[in-house]
Amino acid sequence: MLILQGNSAPAGSYPDEQGKNIAWPFGALHVSAASEYAKRRGYEAVVLDVGGYPQSQESPQAKAALKKFSEDQAVRAFYGFSGGGYNLRHILDRLASHEPDTLHRIDLIVVLGAPKQPKAAYEASRYNPIARKKVHPIKWEDAKWELVYGTDPPAKWALPKGVPPGTGKHMFGPEWLLAGMPAS
Image 1 (cartoon, helix red, strand yellow):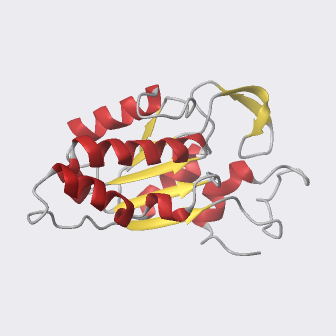
Image 2: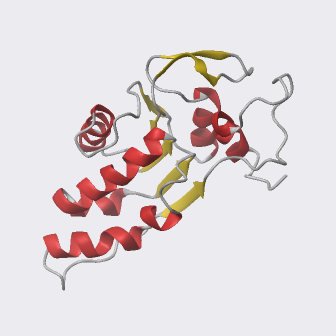
């Protein structure tokens, strides 16, 4: 599973797993929770040390993810958090437009903390029409994957033990996912 981190940030912007606002030079993400999710789902976690900003098909993170996906045929899943989640949409667009057959390799797409893009933006059904135009339409079999989508943990969801009250919950999306994305 290729794991795409959020945006890079200086100290004071985003909390770590203990609620301390640290610097995130390679992209903000609670890596241990994201990696544990990959493991629980039966995937090897491959965390790209490239921040999620800017977001585009040509961004450094998107290029690194596309390169790794192209080189490693064992990669069958993507996990995008925050800025990495927004880049994941651009990655899927690029694959559908330029390497449509590779969409069939994808089993799972995970998107957390990217609320400006709706869940539908990551459904396989959005990319199949694009891919179909790139190959012979009669020969195209629709790609299918599981989609796990969550914006941010809800207000009622309790932060992990030891995290100071009032800490923003956005960065705790990976822990929320591990807990099954409960409403409270």
